[in-house]
Image 1 (cartoon, rainbow, N blue to C red):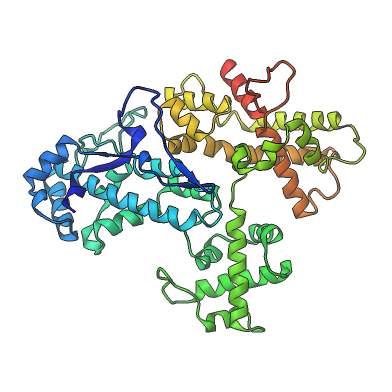
Image 2 (image 1 turned 120 degrees about the vertical axis):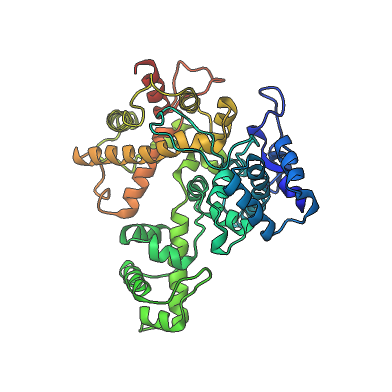
Length: 460
Protein backbone atom coordinates (compact mmCIF):
# COMPACT_ATOMS: atom_id res chain seq x y z
CA UNK A 1 0.00 0.00 0.00
CA UNK A 2 1.05 3.61 -0.57
CA UNK A 3 0.98 4.13 3.21
CA UNK A 4 4.25 2.19 3.37
CA UNK A 5 5.92 5.31 1.98
CA UNK A 6 4.78 7.60 4.80
CA UNK A 7 4.73 5.29 7.84
CA UNK A 8 8.02 4.30 9.43
CA UNK A 9 8.27 1.12 11.51
CA UNK A 10 10.96 1.61 14.15
CA UNK A 11 12.01 0.34 17.56
CA UNK A 12 10.20 2.22 20.29
CA UNK A 13 13.41 2.98 22.18
CA UNK A 14 14.75 4.99 19.22
CA UNK A 15 12.01 7.65 19.41
CA UNK A 16 10.77 9.89 22.25
CA UNK A 17 7.60 8.05 23.28
CA UNK A 18 7.35 9.35 26.84
CA UNK A 19 9.29 10.33 29.96
CA UNK A 20 12.69 8.77 30.47
CA UNK A 21 12.38 5.41 32.14
CA UNK A 22 8.81 4.81 31.00
CA UNK A 23 8.04 1.11 31.25
CA UNK A 24 6.89 -0.27 27.91
CA UNK A 25 5.76 -3.86 27.68
CA UNK A 26 8.06 -5.54 25.18
CA UNK A 27 6.98 -9.15 25.01
CA UNK A 28 4.41 -11.74 25.91
CA UNK A 29 4.90 -15.41 26.56
CA UNK A 30 2.95 -18.49 25.58
CA UNK A 31 4.26 -21.83 26.74
CA UNK A 32 7.70 -20.36 27.38
CA UNK A 33 8.08 -19.07 23.80
CA UNK A 34 8.77 -15.35 23.44
CA UNK A 35 6.56 -13.92 20.72
CA UNK A 36 6.94 -10.86 18.58
CA UNK A 37 4.79 -8.11 20.07
CA UNK A 38 3.75 -4.88 18.38
CA UNK A 39 4.68 -3.19 21.66
CA UNK A 40 8.25 -3.46 20.37
CA UNK A 41 7.51 -1.44 17.27
CA UNK A 42 6.40 2.16 16.83
CA UNK A 43 4.57 3.38 13.74
CA UNK A 44 5.41 7.01 13.10
CA UNK A 45 4.54 9.31 10.20
CA UNK A 46 7.28 11.93 9.88
CA UNK A 47 6.03 15.28 8.59
CA UNK A 48 8.77 15.31 5.94
CA UNK A 49 7.56 11.98 4.55
CA UNK A 50 3.97 13.18 4.34
CA UNK A 51 5.05 16.37 2.56
CA UNK A 52 7.21 14.38 0.14
CA UNK A 53 4.39 11.93 -0.50
CA UNK A 54 2.17 14.80 -1.55
CA UNK A 55 4.89 16.38 -3.69
CA UNK A 56 5.69 13.11 -5.48
CA UNK A 57 2.05 11.98 -5.61
CA UNK A 58 2.80 8.89 -3.56
CA UNK A 59 -0.74 8.79 -2.20
CA UNK A 60 -2.11 8.33 -5.71
CA UNK A 61 -0.20 5.09 -6.45
CA UNK A 62 0.03 1.56 -5.18
CA UNK A 63 3.40 0.49 -3.81
CA UNK A 64 5.30 -1.15 -6.65
CA UNK A 65 8.80 -1.97 -7.79
CA UNK A 66 8.45 0.49 -10.66
CA UNK A 67 7.52 3.35 -8.36
CA UNK A 68 10.37 2.40 -5.99
CA UNK A 69 12.81 2.81 -8.88
CA UNK A 70 11.32 6.16 -9.90
CA UNK A 71 11.52 7.48 -6.34
CA UNK A 72 15.08 6.19 -6.01
CA UNK A 73 16.03 7.97 -9.22
CA UNK A 74 14.67 11.19 -7.69
CA UNK A 75 16.91 10.63 -4.67
CA UNK A 76 19.96 10.02 -6.82
CA UNK A 77 19.48 12.90 -9.27
CA UNK A 78 18.00 15.57 -7.01
CA UNK A 79 19.34 14.52 -3.60
CA UNK A 80 15.79 14.84 -2.29
CA UNK A 81 15.59 14.22 1.52
CA UNK A 82 11.82 13.72 1.35
CA UNK A 83 12.00 11.02 -1.30
CA UNK A 84 14.85 9.41 0.68
CA UNK A 85 12.67 9.31 3.82
CA UNK A 86 9.74 7.81 1.87
CA UNK A 87 11.94 4.95 0.69
CA UNK A 88 13.26 4.38 4.22
CA UNK A 89 9.63 4.07 5.38
CA UNK A 90 9.01 1.60 2.57
CA UNK A 91 12.06 -0.50 3.55
CA UNK A 92 11.05 -0.54 7.23
CA UNK A 93 7.94 -2.58 6.41
CA UNK A 94 10.00 -5.11 4.43
CA UNK A 95 12.59 -5.37 7.22
CA UNK A 96 9.91 -5.97 9.85
CA UNK A 97 8.21 -8.63 7.71
CA UNK A 98 11.55 -10.38 7.24
CA UNK A 99 12.29 -10.30 11.00
CA UNK A 100 8.90 -11.79 11.81
CA UNK A 101 9.34 -14.51 9.21
CA UNK A 102 12.78 -15.48 10.54
CA UNK A 103 11.50 -15.42 14.12
CA UNK A 104 8.47 -17.57 13.30
CA UNK A 105 10.62 -20.06 11.38
CA UNK A 106 13.26 -20.67 14.02
CA UNK A 107 11.83 -19.81 17.46
CA UNK A 108 10.07 -23.18 17.68
CA UNK A 109 13.28 -25.05 16.75
CA UNK A 110 15.03 -24.75 20.13
CA UNK A 111 16.67 -21.43 19.23
CA UNK A 112 16.27 -18.96 22.10
CA UNK A 113 15.47 -15.96 19.90
CA UNK A 114 14.60 -12.72 21.65
CA UNK A 115 12.81 -10.00 19.64
CA UNK A 116 14.46 -7.25 21.70
CA UNK A 117 17.86 -8.52 20.56
CA UNK A 118 16.84 -8.75 16.89
CA UNK A 119 14.82 -5.59 16.22
CA UNK A 120 17.50 -2.97 17.10
CA UNK A 121 19.78 -4.31 14.36
CA UNK A 122 17.35 -3.33 11.58
CA UNK A 123 14.69 -0.93 12.85
CA UNK A 124 16.99 1.74 14.26
CA UNK A 125 15.74 4.65 12.13
CA UNK A 126 14.06 7.48 14.05
CA UNK A 127 12.71 9.26 10.98
CA UNK A 128 14.94 12.32 10.96
CA UNK A 129 15.46 14.06 7.65
CA UNK A 130 18.77 13.29 5.94
CA UNK A 131 20.10 13.93 2.45
CA UNK A 132 20.50 10.94 0.15
CA UNK A 133 24.21 11.48 -0.42
CA UNK A 134 26.79 13.36 1.62
CA UNK A 135 29.73 15.34 0.35
CA UNK A 136 33.05 13.77 1.28
CA UNK A 137 35.08 15.58 3.90
CA UNK A 138 38.75 16.17 3.22
CA UNK A 139 39.80 15.35 6.77
CA UNK A 140 36.87 13.97 8.77
CA UNK A 141 37.28 14.14 12.52
CA UNK A 142 37.84 10.72 14.12
CA UNK A 143 35.36 11.70 16.86
CA UNK A 144 32.69 12.81 14.37
CA UNK A 145 29.81 10.37 14.82
CA UNK A 146 27.41 10.36 11.89
CA UNK A 147 23.87 9.11 12.11
CA UNK A 148 23.46 6.18 9.73
CA UNK A 149 20.54 3.83 10.22
CA UNK A 150 20.35 0.40 8.64
CA UNK A 151 17.50 1.58 6.41
CA UNK A 152 19.58 4.48 5.09
CA UNK A 153 22.27 2.04 4.05
CA UNK A 154 19.70 -0.15 2.30
CA UNK A 155 18.34 2.72 0.20
CA UNK A 156 21.77 4.17 -0.59
CA UNK A 157 23.06 0.80 -1.76
CA UNK A 158 19.97 -0.08 -3.81
CA UNK A 159 20.85 -0.72 -7.44
CA UNK A 160 17.78 -1.02 -9.69
CA UNK A 161 20.01 -2.15 -12.56
CA UNK A 162 20.60 -5.49 -10.83
CA UNK A 163 16.97 -6.45 -11.31
CA UNK A 164 15.90 -6.90 -7.67
CA UNK A 165 13.08 -4.82 -6.24
CA UNK A 166 13.44 -2.78 -3.08
CA UNK A 167 11.63 -5.42 -0.99
CA UNK A 168 14.02 -8.14 -2.11
CA UNK A 169 16.98 -5.79 -1.71
CA UNK A 170 15.97 -5.06 1.89
CA UNK A 171 15.72 -8.76 2.70
CA UNK A 172 19.12 -9.46 1.16
CA UNK A 173 20.71 -6.69 3.21
CA UNK A 174 18.93 -7.96 6.32
CA UNK A 175 20.38 -11.43 5.78
CA UNK A 176 23.90 -9.98 5.65
CA UNK A 177 23.46 -7.60 8.62
CA UNK A 178 26.53 -8.07 10.85
CA UNK A 179 24.74 -7.17 14.07
CA UNK A 180 22.12 -9.86 13.45
CA UNK A 181 24.76 -12.36 12.33
CA UNK A 182 26.59 -11.96 15.65
CA UNK A 183 23.38 -12.40 17.61
CA UNK A 184 22.23 -15.41 15.60
CA UNK A 185 25.60 -17.09 16.10
CA UNK A 186 25.26 -16.54 19.86
CA UNK A 187 22.17 -18.78 19.88
CA UNK A 188 23.60 -21.30 17.41
CA UNK A 189 21.65 -20.13 14.36
CA UNK A 190 23.41 -19.91 11.01
CA UNK A 191 21.29 -18.57 8.15
CA UNK A 192 23.06 -20.73 5.62
CA UNK A 193 22.26 -24.00 3.96
CA UNK A 194 23.83 -27.14 5.40
CA UNK A 195 25.85 -27.50 2.20
CA UNK A 196 27.29 -23.99 2.50
CA UNK A 197 28.21 -24.55 6.15
CA UNK A 198 30.12 -27.72 5.31
CA UNK A 199 31.91 -25.98 2.45
CA UNK A 200 32.83 -22.68 4.10
CA UNK A 201 32.52 -22.91 7.90
CA UNK A 202 33.85 -26.37 8.70
CA UNK A 203 37.50 -27.07 9.45
CA UNK A 204 39.03 -30.28 10.80
CA UNK A 205 39.31 -29.00 14.37
CA UNK A 206 35.86 -27.53 14.81
CA UNK A 207 34.32 -30.46 12.96
CA UNK A 208 35.90 -32.95 15.37
CA UNK A 209 34.82 -30.81 18.34
CA UNK A 210 31.27 -30.53 17.03
CA UNK A 211 30.97 -34.24 16.26
CA UNK A 212 32.40 -35.26 19.61
CA UNK A 213 29.75 -33.29 21.51
CA UNK A 214 26.78 -33.16 19.13
CA UNK A 215 27.17 -35.95 16.57
CA UNK A 216 23.98 -37.98 16.19
CA UNK A 217 25.29 -40.96 14.18
CA UNK A 218 27.79 -43.71 15.12
CA UNK A 219 30.61 -42.38 12.91
CA UNK A 220 34.22 -42.41 14.00
CA UNK A 221 36.35 -39.27 13.91
CA UNK A 222 38.46 -40.50 10.97
CA UNK A 223 35.35 -41.17 8.88
CA UNK A 224 33.90 -37.73 9.63
CA UNK A 225 37.14 -36.00 8.62
CA UNK A 226 37.37 -38.08 5.42
CA UNK A 227 33.80 -37.18 4.43
CA UNK A 228 34.45 -33.50 5.12
CA UNK A 229 37.70 -33.42 3.13
CA UNK A 230 36.13 -35.20 0.15
CA UNK A 231 33.05 -32.98 0.24
CA UNK A 232 35.04 -29.74 0.32
CA UNK A 233 37.39 -30.87 -2.46
CA UNK A 234 34.53 -31.86 -4.78
CA UNK A 235 32.48 -28.77 -3.86
CA UNK A 236 35.33 -26.42 -4.85
CA UNK A 237 36.19 -28.30 -8.06
CA UNK A 238 32.54 -28.54 -9.15
CA UNK A 239 31.86 -25.92 -11.83
CA UNK A 240 28.14 -25.91 -11.15
CA UNK A 241 26.99 -22.52 -9.87
CA UNK A 242 25.75 -22.78 -6.27
CA UNK A 243 22.52 -20.81 -6.43
CA UNK A 244 20.19 -20.34 -3.46
CA UNK A 245 18.47 -23.65 -2.77
CA UNK A 246 21.26 -25.68 -4.39
CA UNK A 247 21.71 -29.24 -3.15
CA UNK A 248 24.19 -31.92 -4.25
CA UNK A 249 23.08 -34.52 -6.76
CA UNK A 250 23.29 -38.27 -6.21
CA UNK A 251 26.38 -38.27 -8.42
CA UNK A 252 27.95 -35.67 -6.11
CA UNK A 253 27.24 -37.82 -3.05
CA UNK A 254 28.63 -40.90 -4.82
CA UNK A 255 31.86 -39.05 -5.55
CA UNK A 256 32.18 -38.04 -1.87
CA UNK A 257 31.80 -41.62 -0.63
CA UNK A 258 32.00 -44.26 -3.41
CA UNK A 259 31.75 -47.09 -0.88
CA UNK A 260 28.16 -46.42 0.18
CA UNK A 261 24.75 -45.40 -1.14
CA UNK A 262 24.21 -41.66 -1.93
CA UNK A 263 21.29 -41.47 0.52
CA UNK A 264 23.52 -42.67 3.35
CA UNK A 265 26.18 -40.10 2.48
CA UNK A 266 23.57 -37.34 2.42
CA UNK A 267 22.28 -38.39 5.86
CA UNK A 268 25.80 -38.35 7.32
CA UNK A 269 26.69 -34.95 5.82
CA UNK A 270 23.46 -33.42 7.11
CA UNK A 271 24.19 -34.80 10.59
CA UNK A 272 27.66 -33.23 10.43
CA UNK A 273 26.20 -29.85 9.46
CA UNK A 274 23.70 -30.05 12.32
CA UNK A 275 26.51 -30.78 14.77
CA UNK A 276 28.30 -27.65 13.56
CA UNK A 277 25.13 -25.61 14.07
CA UNK A 278 24.71 -26.95 17.60
CA UNK A 279 28.32 -26.12 18.41
CA UNK A 280 27.75 -22.45 17.61
CA UNK A 281 25.51 -22.00 20.68
CA UNK A 282 27.32 -19.38 22.74
CA UNK A 283 28.57 -20.04 26.24
CA UNK A 284 27.30 -16.53 26.98
CA UNK A 285 23.96 -18.13 27.87
CA UNK A 286 25.57 -19.24 31.14
CA UNK A 287 25.30 -15.59 32.20
CA UNK A 288 21.50 -15.76 31.90
CA UNK A 289 19.86 -18.17 34.41
CA UNK A 290 16.79 -18.31 32.16
CA UNK A 291 18.83 -20.28 29.62
CA UNK A 292 20.80 -22.27 32.16
CA UNK A 293 18.53 -23.68 34.86
CA UNK A 294 21.42 -25.32 36.68
CA UNK A 295 22.80 -21.90 37.61
CA UNK A 296 19.44 -20.76 38.92
CA UNK A 297 18.95 -23.86 41.04
CA UNK A 298 22.37 -24.06 42.68
CA UNK A 299 24.45 -21.42 44.40
CA UNK A 300 27.99 -20.78 43.10
CA UNK A 301 29.45 -22.27 46.26
CA UNK A 302 27.61 -25.53 45.54
CA UNK A 303 28.18 -25.61 41.78
CA UNK A 304 31.76 -24.41 41.31
CA UNK A 305 33.83 -27.10 43.10
CA UNK A 306 31.88 -29.88 41.38
CA UNK A 307 32.61 -28.35 37.97
CA UNK A 308 36.22 -27.46 38.70
CA UNK A 309 37.33 -30.58 40.54
CA UNK A 310 37.86 -32.36 37.23
CA UNK A 311 40.45 -29.80 36.13
CA UNK A 312 43.18 -29.99 38.76
CA UNK A 313 45.40 -32.91 39.61
CA UNK A 314 44.20 -35.42 42.19
CA UNK A 315 47.05 -34.46 44.56
CA UNK A 316 45.16 -31.28 45.44
CA UNK A 317 42.35 -32.47 47.68
CA UNK A 318 41.00 -29.29 49.32
CA UNK A 319 38.37 -27.42 47.32
CA UNK A 320 39.55 -24.06 48.66
CA UNK A 321 43.13 -24.74 47.58
CA UNK A 322 41.91 -25.69 44.11
CA UNK A 323 39.83 -22.55 43.78
CA UNK A 324 42.72 -20.34 44.89
CA UNK A 325 45.01 -21.84 42.24
CA UNK A 326 42.35 -21.44 39.55
CA UNK A 327 41.49 -17.88 40.58
CA UNK A 328 45.14 -16.86 40.58
CA UNK A 329 45.61 -18.21 37.05
CA UNK A 330 42.44 -16.48 35.85
CA UNK A 331 43.44 -13.16 37.40
CA UNK A 332 46.86 -13.26 35.74
CA UNK A 333 45.21 -14.05 32.40
CA UNK A 334 42.74 -11.17 32.89
CA UNK A 335 45.61 -8.78 33.63
CA UNK A 336 47.36 -9.90 30.45
CA UNK A 337 44.48 -9.86 27.96
CA UNK A 338 41.88 -7.38 29.23
CA UNK A 339 43.85 -4.08 29.13
CA UNK A 340 43.88 -4.10 25.31
CA UNK A 341 40.05 -4.17 25.42
CA UNK A 342 39.97 -1.19 27.80
CA UNK A 343 43.13 0.71 26.80
CA UNK A 344 42.15 4.29 27.64
CA UNK A 345 39.32 4.74 30.12
CA UNK A 346 39.64 8.52 30.32
CA UNK A 347 39.21 8.99 26.55
CA UNK A 348 36.19 6.68 26.35
CA UNK A 349 32.96 8.23 25.09
CA UNK A 350 30.05 8.55 27.52
CA UNK A 351 27.92 5.79 26.01
CA UNK A 352 30.68 3.17 25.96
CA UNK A 353 31.63 4.06 29.54
CA UNK A 354 28.00 3.64 30.61
CA UNK A 355 27.73 0.23 28.92
CA UNK A 356 30.91 -1.09 30.52
CA UNK A 357 29.88 0.07 33.99
CA UNK A 358 26.38 -1.36 33.54
CA UNK A 359 27.89 -4.71 32.56
CA UNK A 360 30.08 -4.55 35.66
CA UNK A 361 26.90 -4.19 37.73
CA UNK A 362 25.63 -7.53 36.41
CA UNK A 363 23.19 -6.24 33.78
CA UNK A 364 22.33 -8.16 30.62
CA UNK A 365 22.08 -6.50 27.19
CA UNK A 366 18.44 -5.51 27.60
CA UNK A 367 19.04 -3.94 31.02
CA UNK A 368 22.15 -2.18 29.69
CA UNK A 369 20.09 -0.75 26.81
CA UNK A 370 17.57 0.71 29.25
CA UNK A 371 20.28 2.07 31.56
CA UNK A 372 22.39 3.67 28.81
CA UNK A 373 19.60 4.75 26.43
CA UNK A 374 20.83 2.64 23.56
CA UNK A 375 19.69 -0.53 21.81
CA UNK A 376 20.52 -4.04 23.02
CA UNK A 377 22.32 -4.54 19.70
CA UNK A 378 24.57 -1.56 20.46
CA UNK A 379 25.43 -2.99 23.88
CA UNK A 380 26.31 -6.33 22.30
CA UNK A 381 28.38 -4.76 19.53
CA UNK A 382 30.35 -2.36 21.75
CA UNK A 383 30.91 -4.40 24.89
CA UNK A 384 29.42 -7.84 25.49
CA UNK A 385 30.28 -9.32 22.09
CA UNK A 386 34.01 -8.37 22.11
CA UNK A 387 34.22 -9.20 25.82
CA UNK A 388 32.87 -12.71 25.36
CA UNK A 389 35.52 -13.45 22.74
CA UNK A 390 38.25 -12.06 25.00
CA UNK A 391 37.11 -14.09 28.01
CA UNK A 392 37.39 -17.30 26.02
CA UNK A 393 41.04 -16.37 25.38
CA UNK A 394 41.47 -15.65 29.10
CA UNK A 395 40.10 -19.10 30.02
CA UNK A 396 42.41 -20.85 27.54
CA UNK A 397 45.43 -18.91 28.86
CA UNK A 398 44.61 -19.85 32.46
CA UNK A 399 44.16 -23.50 31.49
CA UNK A 400 47.55 -23.51 29.75
CA UNK A 401 49.19 -22.11 32.89
CA UNK A 402 47.56 -24.71 35.13
CA UNK A 403 48.62 -27.47 32.74
CA UNK A 404 52.17 -26.12 32.45
CA UNK A 405 52.57 -26.03 36.25
CA UNK A 406 51.35 -29.60 36.63
CA UNK A 407 48.05 -28.70 38.29
CA UNK A 408 45.77 -30.29 35.66
CA UNK A 409 44.68 -33.87 35.23
CA UNK A 410 46.35 -35.90 32.50
CA UNK A 411 43.19 -35.76 30.39
CA UNK A 412 43.47 -31.98 29.89
CA UNK A 413 45.25 -31.35 26.61
CA UNK A 414 45.04 -35.01 25.56
CA UNK A 415 41.29 -35.57 25.52
CA UNK A 416 39.29 -33.04 23.50
CA UNK A 417 36.12 -33.51 25.52
CA UNK A 418 37.87 -33.05 28.86
CA UNK A 419 39.70 -29.96 27.61
CA UNK A 420 36.47 -28.41 26.33
CA UNK A 421 34.73 -29.03 29.66
CA UNK A 422 37.67 -27.52 31.52
CA UNK A 423 37.59 -24.35 29.41
CA UNK A 424 33.82 -24.09 29.94
CA UNK A 425 34.25 -24.44 33.70
CA UNK A 426 36.82 -21.64 33.74
CA UNK A 427 34.53 -19.43 31.64
CA UNK A 428 31.74 -20.03 34.14
CA UNK A 429 34.10 -19.16 36.98
CA UNK A 430 34.84 -15.81 35.27
CA UNK A 431 31.21 -14.73 34.83
CA UNK A 432 29.37 -16.34 37.74
CA UNK A 433 28.81 -14.32 40.95
CA UNK A 434 31.41 -14.94 43.62
CA UNK A 435 30.43 -15.51 47.24
CA UNK A 436 31.58 -12.78 49.60
CA UNK A 437 31.02 -12.37 53.30
CA UNK A 438 30.82 -8.57 53.07
CA UNK A 439 28.04 -8.57 50.48
CA UNK A 440 24.49 -8.43 51.83
CA UNK A 441 22.01 -11.04 50.63
CA UNK A 442 19.95 -8.44 48.71
CA UNK A 443 22.94 -7.02 46.83
CA UNK A 444 24.35 -8.19 43.53
CA UNK A 445 27.37 -10.40 44.02
CA UNK A 446 29.93 -9.46 41.35
CA UNK A 447 31.77 -11.96 39.18
CA UNK A 448 35.52 -12.03 38.74
CA UNK A 449 35.42 -10.16 35.44
CA UNK A 450 33.00 -7.57 36.85
CA UNK A 451 35.41 -6.90 39.71
CA UNK A 452 38.26 -6.52 37.23
CA UNK A 453 36.30 -3.98 35.18
CA UNK A 454 35.30 -1.98 38.26
CA UNK A 455 38.91 -1.89 39.40
CA UNK A 456 39.99 -0.76 35.92
CA UNK A 457 37.64 2.22 36.12
CA UNK A 458 38.79 3.04 39.65
CA UNK A 459 42.48 2.83 38.70
CA UNK A 460 42.85 3.44 34.94
